[in-house]
Length: 355
Image (cartoon, rainbow, N blue to C red):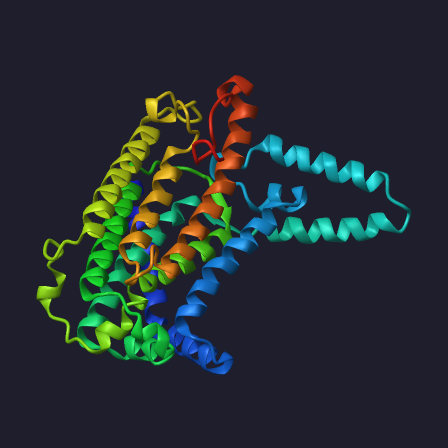
């Protein structure tokens, strides 16, 4: 286990070091893109989350794409692959004489794209990225650094004027960093050697999300940061609690605790075992439910004055809900195939009474 964890850390750090070395290039590209499109940085960030979520949802609709690109890990079963192959073969046999060549070419192209996969252990990189990005942006906010200035310069006056408070910025930053550190700890502590893989686009999407959400927690406070010289006192997350904070903070902590317990329990199960923990009695994926609540609590905590939610973080919640909702659906299908209909009967995928 120690050797496995050391290998994961070493591999991930090498890849992360490369990404960090290219951070300046990435920032220049983002700034150039915003400048060319004459687009507000806040609107661009919201659009990224929504576009990514809609793209994932679109890929999940056709069976030919869903079975190839959506499942990962244990969900990418041999049975699903055989089912897809059978369906494609049947469809081709019913086509005209000219169609099979076309179908075959499309099928080969899809199979080739689906074969571009990375180890499932790369999930750890998401939280390494989140932790490092959080620290990077904290330093940028403290110093009014070049990267912060580049993004702030692309924010329209109306977004700067309706900025959230320094306390909201720092508290949301601290909670997101806590989330990243906890999930990184869980990945390193609970991971087991596995040959599971995921489609490389899942990996890119995850990296993109965590890079973006590290900006989302402060971008609507950019106007306040510009007019306030941050100091270490602003990182005192125990002061100046508001009613909004007193409501959202316990929700964040409880959801985090539930998610941690779920991950710890799942890691203790024998491979491919049906969960029987009370938290899984009514919901197939309570850890996904907790993830949505965690980001929803941040969206509520970071709402500008007069608003119920922070729209940028709410768009991130939309991405999380769509992405995990689709994964929960494939989990239900996998449980049904592996353990029978009784294993999923009467259970919600992720959101009680809704989904």
